[in-house]
Length: 252
Image (cartoon, rainbow, N blue to C red; front, top):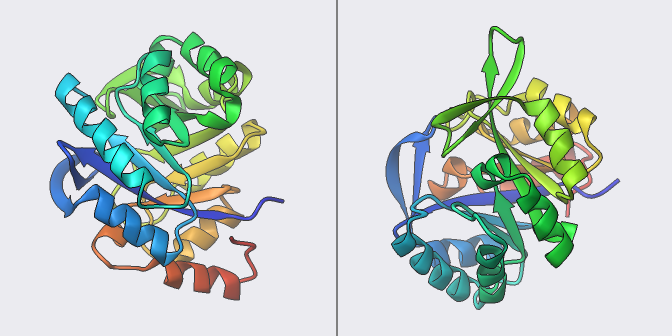
């Protein structure tokens, strides 16, 4: 079994890190390059950068942020947000990203996952899934466009399809839990983890070290991602890892 990973997430807008609750009410959380270097020193296993500007201007800013970050850190990092072509992937990988995260574009054009995996290898392609519980279905629905647009696609079916297309990893965000600090969505995470054979990064809801333990055990996740608690110093990576070690979880 692979060691579990702790991954801070940096939502980058116009060159600054921001964070909200349930995908809204954003507030400034600092400089992305400085925060990335801090998390590297503090023992993060990886980082995720999400470009939530994703306009033409935002993309140019983001490439520069990626380039600067790559020069400051030694751990792998994934970059996502507004990526809609293999050329977009290539530019970010050349700037220093280790992996590419795709969400809306993958739903719109699934062959983008296939093309990216063929060109750069599955290990470079992370399909991000934003999911929200659909009461009428009794299961989870995929949302796109930063959680603003429902798709009518069932999350478990899309997770399996993404794996078939060549995704090397899934970044699974519970929109219901996002930013709440009440714990990860264990039912969603376990259901997706059971449905696929590739690693699942759980995102949305981390508030305590116990939440990470729960998502690695009951949720069956391979990695736990968080933003708010790390950005605002409510918890340190060392505290989370120390707790997990005490509980016998195999971590890096």
